[in-house]
Amino acid sequence: MIEFRGVTKRFPDGTVAVDHLDLTVDAGRITVFVGPSGCGKTTSLRMVNRMIEATEGTITIDGRDVMAVDAAELRRGIGYVIQQAGLFPHRTILDNIATVPLLLGWRKAKARERAAELMEVVGLAPELARRYPSQLSGGQQQRVGVARALAADPPILLMDEPFSAVDPVVRESLQDELLRLQAELGKTIVFVTHDIDEAVKLGDKVAVFRTGGVLAQYDEPGRLLARPADDFVDAFVGRDRGYRGLGFLSSDALPLGELPTVALGATVPEDAGWVLVVDQTRQPLGWIHGSGTGTVMAVQESLVPGGSLYEVESGSLRSALDAALSSPSGQGVAIDGDGGVAGSVSADDVLRVLEHTRRDPAAA
Image (cartoon, rainbow, N blue to C red; front, side, top):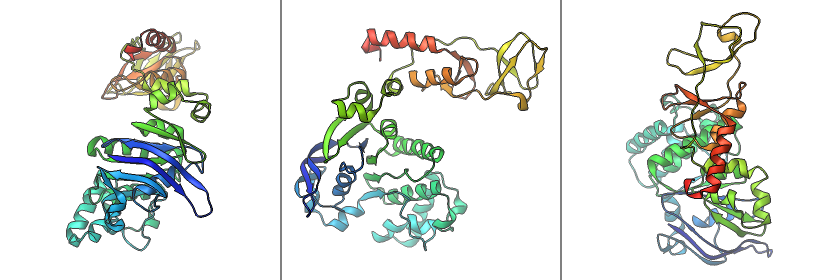
């Protein structure tokens, strides 16, 4: 557990970056610091490992004041991931990951063995081990950065906007990978971002900072979206917070409808309307329309993309509504745990469940 008690950072020119911060970071959870530029979120993060030292107040880790620990020793026990990974350009990927274990006195063979294990954990192919950072994509470099931070198995991981320099598709993949790793490892993670969507997706709790280093609200993401503390938080979270809030509402009561399907290569009657095309395992491939001009064959080249999919076992009202709205037929595709078609979902059904949830908040 990390505790900030009355923490202030004032720079020599009089600028107050963090102003009397009181906050507790729960052990084994992801806490996200979010806010506009200059709000003190990165300064707060860096005070945990003393890359910046507080002017006033105390920061403790499991009850021990960080100022009572040698700075180098403190940092070796805390993983740190930054933008663009910060890798050593003239070291191989394997040796980049092994950096901290070697500093801790591990034998080179043991450190490299640990590095090779972590490459697999973060989804890096073994053949990348002997390459150099410049030979990797931005997303691969960020995975190396995460692996390096985990190499000595630190209980705490600090992440300073680690995914902001990659494109949106890679960024979403890295976010999913972080959530997967956290489910396995259970680290205490402090994550800094300026993106409220990223904060809401990743955080078990989210701390919203306002300019001047003042904590505006610290809450679970669902409550943050549903009940912003003031006008600043309301504006920062955004006007579509109601839609994003659906991501925290259970879809257990959502009924599944029938969905007409045909196998790839089959014919579709002219009056069939929209029909979902599936493969041999009933996984959706796309849509085809019987438009009234005669039968059509369901071939790959004629398929219309089907939009997003709603996973019955892990989905939310948001994913169900998005599946319905993004489908060309207006019927969202619901899939089971194996990716096979389980039925359909409609926007009307999602809204009915939402109305029931509002009348009975315990159902959420």
